[in-house]
Image (cartoon, rainbow, N blue to C red):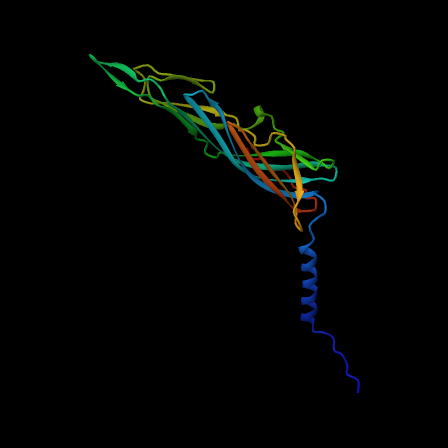
Length: 237
């Protein structure tokens, strides 16, 4: 007597198909660096340090970009800025008050006071497949970048020139001088090429690090998918 083989139930077929698709997706990273990428990083610079005045600026940022088959890279980056000015070693100030005088140690400082210190810029770059290097930069010129509000506060009797702003007070002025100036957002991308590498059984990745006496930049990105995503840039004011 022959035994008739029954087909597997529907749930079993669905399960086997899911396992097969999962197996394909686990090893389905593209064999090329073209497609959609996401990354993040930090940057810090000290554009002024003369022994008395020290200005420190920093930013942390997230970004995305796509690499086309012709090597062109386009995307956008969101940067969240911070900045601080410190002034040390100022001489004591003596001011005439009535028939006498009063002495005190003046102070000068400043910080970023922009209500929203986040700026969004387009990204542009190029992938050179001859040396596997990626280059990224913000194509927006410095003068065209929306400025950040920076506020300087100084005690009376202080005189200094900071970022093009002249600060000076006489004994009859107010207790504290508040001066708001515009600060240009700096870019963490300097156009340097960085090598793209592929992780074993994983996506393509890139890691950039550059440090000096007055700056430090670190960022990394990974390929999320091999498809070309057409996304409209939504630049923030």
